[in-house]
Image 1 (cartoon, rainbow, N blue to C red):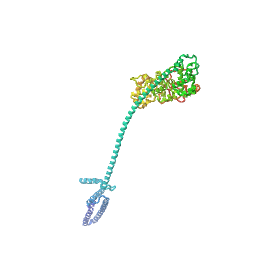
Image 2: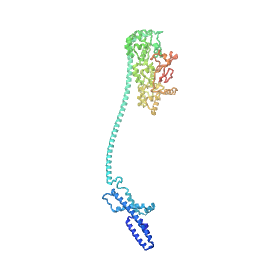
Image 3: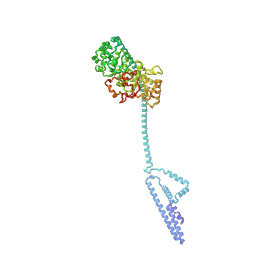
Image 4: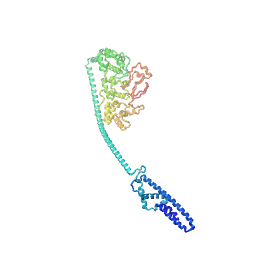
Length: 619
C-alpha cells in the first residue's frame, strides 16, 4: 500500500495511463483483502484506499486533460497545414509527439528543479541524448514560414521569380554599364581630340605672336625709314626753295637790334631768344619787333605763310590765315589771343606749337629736336610702350621741339593721367636729351653684346625689354608689358622703379616666390651695381613711397594766394616742365613766388601751394 502511494505518480507519468490506472485498482483490491483478514486495521485500510483512489482519479483526470490538449493541438496543427494531404501520418508519429509532450510536462513537474533535471540528464544514455539533439537541431529549420503559412513549393516559386527578376535587373544594369562605358570612351576620345586641338592652337598662337612681333619690328623700321625720308625731303625742299635762300641771305645781312621793344611775358613755357639755355619765361623774345628782321617780315607773303603752316602740320588753319594774315609780320607781332581769335586755334597745344615754330624762325636757332615731326613722335610712343596715346599726340601735333617744353598740364590735356606713364615719358625725354635727340637712339632688336651695360640698357625700347624677358625664360609674361610704358630709360633712370614694380606690371602672382626671385636676380644683373645701389638707397630713404602702377596725377588746384595771379596767367601758361634741362631761376623765383611743380606724385584734393613733394624729383 505504501509502495502504491509513493509510486502512483510515477506510474501515471508513463505513456499508458489507463493501464497504470487498472494496475492501481488491482493493487487496491489486493491490499483490501489483506486488510480484511486483520479486522483491527480495517478502518486504516479504508482510509488509505480512499486516499489512493482519490489520488489516482486526480492524476488520471490531469492525464486525460493533457491528452485532450495535446490532441487538440495536433488536430489544429494538422488543420493548419503542418502535414500535407497524403503525408504518412500514423499512430507511431502521434505517439512520438505525445511522448515528447509528456517529457516536457514531466520536466516541468520535477520537484527538485534544476538539480533533478541534471540528475535525469546524467542518467540518460548518450545515444539517446545524441538522437534527441540531432532531431531537435534538424527541426529548427522549419519546412514552412509560420508567419505567412508559405509551403516549400510556394517558397520555391517565389525564389524562382526573385531569381528571374534579379537576372533581368542584372541584364539591364549590364546594358547601362556598357552604354556608360561607350559614353566614357567617346568622352575620352573627344578629350584627346580637344587636347590635340588645344596644343595645335597654342602652337599657332605662338607662331602668330612671333609673326606679329616680327611684323611690328618691320613696321617700326619702315616708319623709321619714312621719317628719315620725310626729313630728307623737307631739307631738300628747303634747299631748293629760292625764297628760303633769300631769307637766309637777308638774315645774315640784317644786324641785330640793340634795344628791341618787347611786350611783357605771356608764355613762360617757351625758350628765350639770344640764350643757349631754356628759361621758364621767354615770351618777350618770341614776339619780336619789326626792327629785329624787317626784311624777313616784308618778304613773307600770305601764301608763304600758308605753305609754312602746311609743312608745320597746322594746315587746318590755312583758310583762316588767308583771311587774316597779310605778311609774316602779322604772325610775328600777334599774341596768343590773336591766334585764338583770328586763326581760330582753340587747342592750347596748337598755339604752343605755333609759338615755338615762330620763335625758332625768328631766333634762327638750330635745334636737333626741330627735325623730329609729329609723325616721328607717334613712332616714339610705340618705342617707349605707350601706343595708346598716339591719337591724342597726333591730334595735338606734338613734335620733337614740343617734347622739350612739355609740361605736366600738357600731359593731362593729352589724357595722360597715370603717374607711371608720366615717369615713363619723363625718362624717355631724358634719354633723348642724353642722345641729342637722335631719332635712332632707341634700340629695338637684340644686339651682339652678351652682357649689355647700363648705358646701353637705357636705350632699350619697350620691344627690346620684352625680348630680354623672353631671353630670361619669362616669355609668357612678356606680352603684359604692351602699353605699360616700360623701357630701358625707365628701368635705369627711375629710382622708384624696381623688381617689385616690374613683377606687378608683369602680373606675376605674389605666391610665386621662386619666379619673382628669378626675375629679381636678372633685374639686378641688368641694371648694374651702381643703379641697384641707388635704388636700394632710395628705398631706404625716410620719405620713400612705393611706386604705384595705378596712381593718378591730378591737376593742381590754386589756393587763396593764387587768386591774384588768375588775371595775369592764362590756363596754358604752365611752367611745370615734365623734364627740364636744368634748374633755372628767373625773377619770379628769386622774388619768392611759387616754385614750379617738380613731382609726378598724385595730387590730392585740397592741395595748396605749400604742399610737400610726393613723387620722385624730375631730372
